[in-house]
Length: 93
Image (tube, rainbow, N blue to C red; front, side, top):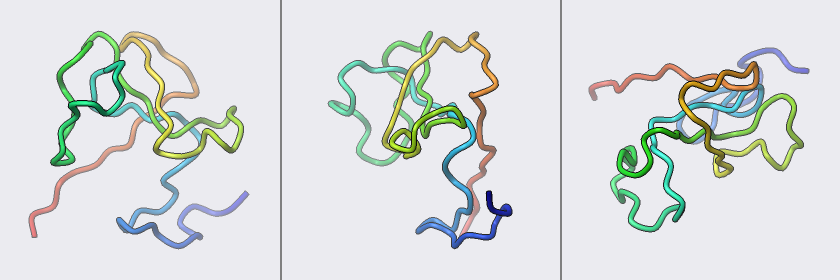
């Protein structure tokens, strides 16, 4: 166990970006993974909007799941102590 913020930040300046809970993201579920996904890093809001993407793995997962490239889906009404979200905002330069 380590203290919050004790490890170096990643390339985006974020600390403690993985682990603890699967994080809900804005993307709708698409079976075809990244085929036809937006190429400008914006959210993928087309597809099955009744199911959303979670990324990153949770406290109960094996280490191989603790990475942002791992994604699962669930309905927006499903609740779990292994699911959460990160509050973020865009800063003007």
